[in-house]
Length: 216
Image (cartoon, rainbow, N blue to C red; front, side, top):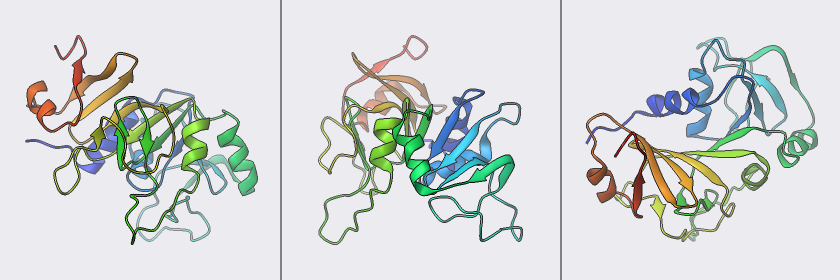
């Protein structure tokens, strides 16, 4: 079964972010989206540690230790970009000023519930950060994650079994196999990797999937 690489997943997410959007990229997989945004679009990236106007990752050897994102990764700053107080950053996130956020996830339910901060395991270290604020404050929440766990279980589930980050907040799911919209009718497949059939995708997904007209 063909699967997208992490960079290919990031490029697929970047493809759907429109010109003029204000976007937060979550820690982990989503940070790679910054490296694939179309050059002809003006997309303003915000980070919860108090940065706006981020560019792609710096070239090796050109890192500035004072320029980092919320995941402590080195970033670049575009002309007009700025650093500011953490409280102001969260005011942006909570105040509905972000058009999109892209978050990783442990699980997403068929109704768009998100679990991405804690597996509930006794030895796991919970780290919610600003995920709850982003999930409730952004106008659209994109999730970027691998379709299955290392044990082969679907991360798309009927009901989340891990502690929730947000209820009904996810609008679109990007995995290494497909792009899936969360709709009132259910989860609708709008794109799949080359060579994959809907039946094959359904077999590795924990909930019933609906095809879009382009897939049917």
